[in-house]
Amino acid sequence: MAITSLKAGIIGTGFIGPVHLEALRRLGVQVGALCDLPDRVRTLADRLGIPQAFGDYRDLLRSPGVDVVHICSPNRLHCPMALAALRAGKHVVCEKPLAMNTRETAEIVKLARQAGTVFAVNYNVRFYPAVLQMRKLVAGGELGEIIHVNGSYLQDWLFKDTDYNWRLLPTEGGKLRAVADIGTHWMDTASFVLGAKIKSVFADLGTFHKTRKRPLGEVQTFARADAKLKYAAYPVKTEDFANVLLEFSNGARGNLGVSQVAAGRKNCIRLEIYGSKKSAGWCSEDPEMLHFGNRDGANETAVRGTPAFGEGATGFMDYPPGHVEGFPDTFKMLFRSIYGCIAAGNRCECAYATAEDGHAEVAVCEAILASHQARKWVKV
Ligand SMILES: NC(=O)c1ccc[n+]([C@@H]2O[C@H](COP(=O)([O-])OP(=O)(O)OC[C@H]3O[C@@H](n4cnc5c(N)ncnc54)[C@H](O)[C@@H]3O)[C@@H](O)[C@H]2O)c1
Image (cartoon, rainbow, N blue to C red; front, side):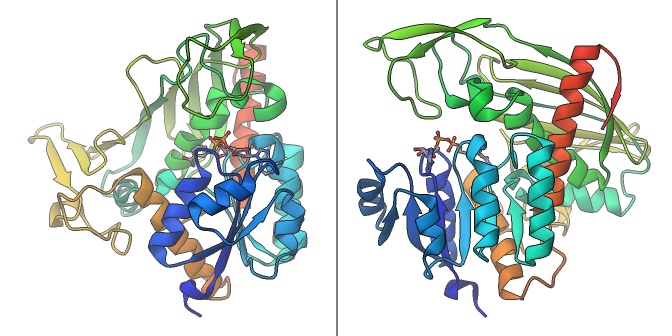
């Protein structure tokens, strides 16, 4: 079966839903159905050129014109939507974090195993060519024994006390915010590259804005403050930033910094791996470059697509060197991998994050919160 014969339906069309749509269209996958709030979904579907519009996700799941369901709604809705999609016999691509807590993620894992359809969690950072290459270098022993890893995920879109989004509310996004929203991207990427799970953590969480102002009315992700808006103050129960020490199952140690109040950092994920032979490092602000550090010889920088970059990302690049592939391309490569697996009858070893991986990241989040509260190391 060709992936172009598969039909997708997207639930949630705020910031990330359209990124899914665009990537699917680049692959030739038809997006036949959209679901969002009833008062806006028809207008959105017309604007995006999608034939079917549903104001209730259960109606989208009943549509025979949908093989794969993309869940791009706020975190609170991931679990009920994922379970219903699995029960309807659909393949699922669910946004991260997989759900609000491990009780929910465990339920999804159980049903996904029984269903036998493809279930993927949208940890797209895995599909930067540089990340795939780092993974190959680690697996091939080219960095030597991994001593420690260092990195961060930093943003500034919640820098001001007037910056508002549903993620700030534990009832919508979960008990952790910066860590669950972007920290899990880093943790998933680091585990993927190292081929090792995070087994214990020591965390310190911080909330700079203890009170924030919520605009009266609705605000989209990454929207900027508007002087004409009226605001209501509310206490903040989720963290703005975090520092986490990590221990991986292969013995490597790590430290991770996460922040959504880091002025100037728009969307910066950085991972450095220090091995006993050499180090390798990458940053999403310069996604085409892979940096190598040597103790004695000169340090090196390899450009994506050149022989020095290596072959770890073969099949996951479409453009020649110098023709930058970035954030939107990771979605395209991830979906090509997922849809390829569906077309092959779910019988292949793929690089995308599974329900088990999504469950593992939420379990690390819970350990991070417990560690912060107890001020000690906590096992995952
Ligand atoms: N992988 C990534 O890089 C990435 C980036 C951003 C967001 N995300 C994840 O994607 C999800 C959505 O985030 P976002 O930033 O797009 O949020 P958003 O607020 O911009 O969009 C959410 C959309 O869901 C819709 N929605 C709300 N309730 C609904 C319901 N009951 N039925 C159908 N639609 C409903 C909203 O109307 C809105 O259009 C989150 O889980 C987030 O963590 C992932």
